[in-house]
Image 1 (tube, rainbow, N blue to C red):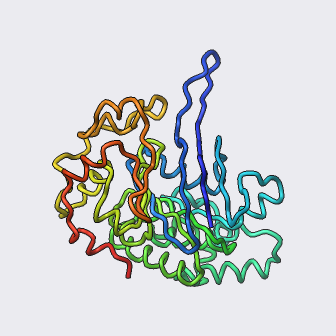
Image 2: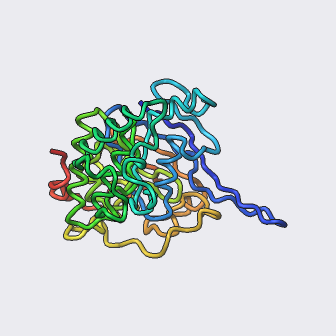
Image 3: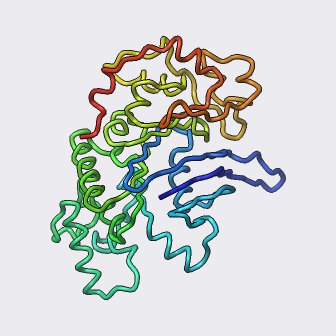
Length: 329
């Protein structure tokens, strides 16, 4: 369904006297997403996950690159053609309390994306959307302050789906919710995907969530995808030291490595030369400082960008039991 090629997003800030260095949020990102796939995106804060999701669907305009949707060059569309095409896409944002206008009724919030429908049609579509997310029609006239966190997120999901999109970006859809509510929202999203044949991009820092729901996973570091592959294979045998470090942080799991991530992600204004992870990598050699690694395939469903994968393989410990709880039902 979606093919992304050489996607770039730079933010340039200008002061009155000086043009600052651009923030390189995305740099030469490439990936495909198949119809009905759940495509997970993981990485630390500042890795570019949210920017990737919003740029892929042109809620944020890319600086460079191409996005093809069912063979159509989505990046070239303009005006009414672009507006019509963009209805294929939607977003569920991280914090429903910030995403919902506190002065609007639930009915107005959910119906906001609708165009060219009668009042009667709009009312019925709102009721249907609320029913799909498990809320009674009596909620239509409530305001956000009258809702719990889980109910707010259900309203946000209803709004995201009211136009019958094909592709939905889920940007940390449960991170702002109580643990007791998270599973309910995740189960709802799975049910809706199966019912409506949806394609998801699931952005999350929660590896357990991504592991359980995603078909494939992309690991991002400082605006780059450093590893991508089938979820079970990637979780079982990660080939990039950054991926291994992330997975080693899972509570109650045996570690792949004898190191853990220290320090913060470097500045996207001035990323390290060569491999952007070399400043935090225990396997870094001189070539890592000089040359950016290319994405290389390891089998049909697994690719990694690392100069020293042979060293990573030698020192990593495989733990097949780690994946046990991550297989999709």
